[in-house]
Length: 323
Ligand SMILES: [Zn+2]
Image (cartoon, rainbow, N blue to C red; front, top):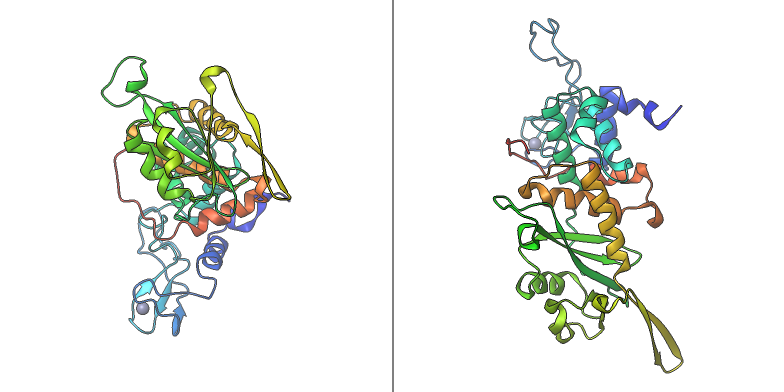
């Protein structure tokens, strides 16, 4: 037996049961009116006969609501809606993406799942959407430390040359021992960076940055801001402070966020060679998700897949154009 031999990876009824248990912990909820009483499971319903399947295909996970008289399944209102792919294949795809550290390309999904490349591409982006965090609470409260930094990535649409001005800018906030949050921003200017830092980092947090111009005035907002002086070849230093009996050593560095970027860049270079600018935020959501739910924080592959499934709700994607 292995992880991959679990029934919900192969059997459609088991796949529905698995997803229902996660998305409906209190039992089925009508997608149309929100009712939870008088819900009936419809058994033995089949799709209309076709040339390919003259008997029709069994419709799994079909319910009828006694309140509004409408039918629904757990796929409605999730990333699984409007996709003809069997649910057990979705679960395979989620498992693959959640258990690979650097991500998995559409090409590999296409080969492993035996779906078309186009389907694989849609799957990947929909799962990334499920991974997008909707937790907007400030980072670094209760004396935590947050590192903020920017990196340049890929090429902006319509530009040539190798200059920094032609690249996408990514801003990432990482709480030491905690989560990461990345943003695709217009430039490394105060105008672009400060509102995000102000919004997502607790005012009482230790804030570590480099000596970039846009971080100059940040002390007004964050009294515990420290900058590491990279241009003087400094990659970290220790500062000591004493508050009565309490003695604190502070590591002034941005090494944690740089570690995040090294995973991100290896993944993007190795796995996602071509990423259109307007999809970059989805890849960032994927790398943030995996980083924020990593083994060091006690999250294993199974829990990560569970969290991605939880996020599948309310995140239907409607775009059609490929990358
Ligand atoms: Zn209803």
